[in-house]
Length: 206
Image (tube, rainbow, N blue to C red; front, side, top):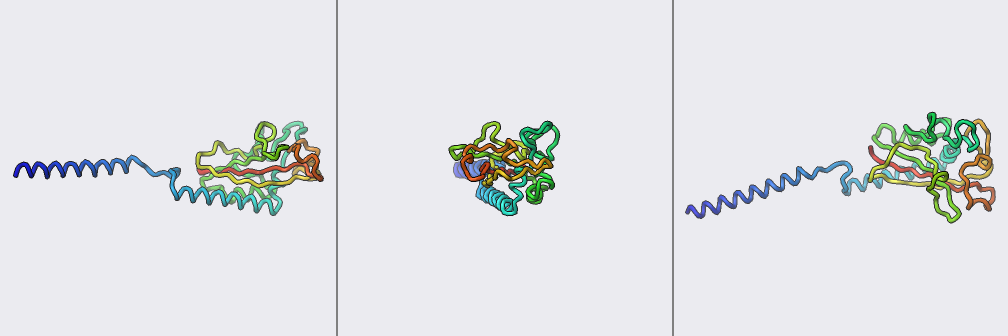
């Protein structure tokens, strides 16, 4: 009888230890907003779709090209190659999209992302002669720079064609061909095409 009670007690203790181990494991494995899961994958896909739609809308109304051309020419005395409206000693926007003077792209970005705990970077790449985008210094232009993306960041891009007679969005009335910006060797033999650029948006939750 005593032996039977001992076996029962051992079984009870074993079950108790097993349950305690499961509870401890569940508590130690915290599920965070950045944990890999089907839900997070759906959120990333949604963010990528939103970024793609945003770029498409800005391309259709012309504000994407206007923002890309909202810069001072490379020969500008004080702020060469700087995006118009950026703060002193910076060539990129750091707190939001381009200002209203650069068209509606910045307003579209701010309406979409501001106040939602979302950060984004915008890069402008110029095509190389081999058709690829050049990411080295001088061919990568940072329109918006809000920091380093997280591992869960998503990216979307849109190609924009710049023609030789397109003018910069400044008071200088300088054409893109005269500006010294977006030099594209692959477009040199094309009919009045100055450059093919890609505007790339990278989005992540802060």
